[in-house]
Image 1 (tube, one colour):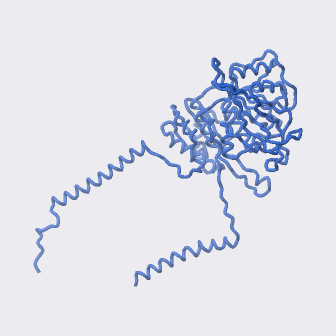
Image 2 (tube, rainbow, N blue to C red; image 1 turned 180 degrees about the vertical axis):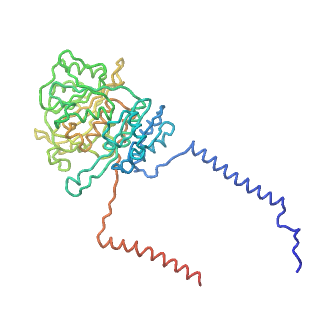
Length: 493
């Protein structure tokens, strides 16, 4: 047998080196393309929300607030991730990650586990003067020395219906308020401006300093201070007292305890409104303010109203609003189907002869009864319960709110007192109404409200549970073994 000719090779040395060079250049080209793709993705990425019902989907107005940022906002999640508020932590961290992704240049997110990082936690609390806090889990927003805090207990709404009815001992979270708080807090620390509201007193009004009586307004005052970032003070207009120049919102809550306002008090309020003032008027009883409101296209009825429709009537004599009308205040409540709980309110009507002259006050009904509403005179029909009044900027007038007059009128002062304000949508309504009156336009746009926490329960009979158990324990493994056996038999043949 002849020996193989060693001088003959499949590839020459030059050809071999050319192949190696070609392989190296191909690998280098692939690596270069990967690097370039990552560079472009980092600066020009596009994220898509596949689940349109996701609780982490940012609303358009939140995106507008983030797009308008020019200052850095440091966000610290001060939580114990696996503590009592574990579910809230997961919602908070997931949502704030979306904020950071939407605005990575100005939103800087940090998580601080106070259970594991004790030293850092103490230093953080001391730095922000929060060492005396009773609530451990919260989110702190900071920008330019301005801070806002959102506590875990505020970020979720709870459903007590199953507990109260005896069906379950579980209190279930049914809504997440993260975006409502976070967007407002980011806006506040980025655009700080002092705001001041005054609660009128001297005629038996609901007291914002009274946290013991059921008809106190301490919770409404807390919402004003802590959630809207507006300082407040009590104000009497009796005698020579005038409405202060820094008053950006006047709150009049006329309960059914004392008499009417004096003429000079009404004149002061009328002048304040003509100069572009803002007012929240809650009028369970006649106060004299009704005459001022008629000049703004609003008539408050004398008779109190109830809804006879059993779908909205509650056993304690209160009722839920059957109709909510689209408006920046009401849109979040409409989207989440959250009615208001009312306590025998007076009807509030737009006047029939509203002026059509350009620039005249625009009156919008916000909520109403069903067609089975009934007043004390036994008249039935749809009764409007809340209205909003707006008049654009008044030429030559520098109004406290930076625009024209805004008024919200309700024929019920009790639906925002300490006993009722946390019912259904009342709390959210109060915050949205205050935001609208104080004119925070980046926040007061439709859709920024509570996000429902959806839960799905699967109910099965005992027989169905047994069938499912055998399916997982025997059916699936047995099927896989049978399929493997068939493959083995096929290969043997």
